[in-house]
Length: 86
Image (cartoon, rainbow, N blue to C red; front, top):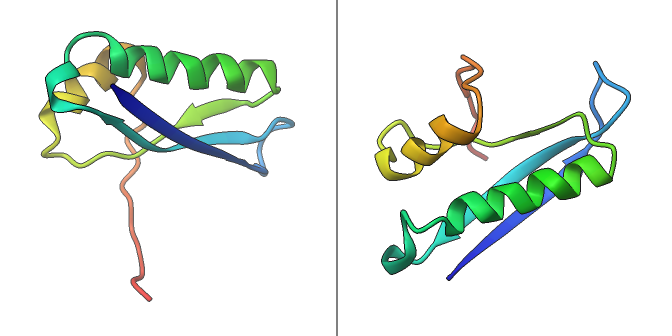
């Protein structure tokens, strides 16, 4: 129905690591069924159990389906992403 990948990394402002939710995918036929929320909650619980300070992720402004879920389960940070392609 779906998959999620995450990783942790040290953080300079906290004692615990940060947990980056790198990829979340739910089959189109299973979207809006609770699968995505369950996957995010699994990562959240794992991060708590492992002493992480936070879970965070990025998404495209245009990803309205995913953003409707993210708006319910997380707080928007107000950060803008920049990148250098290599």
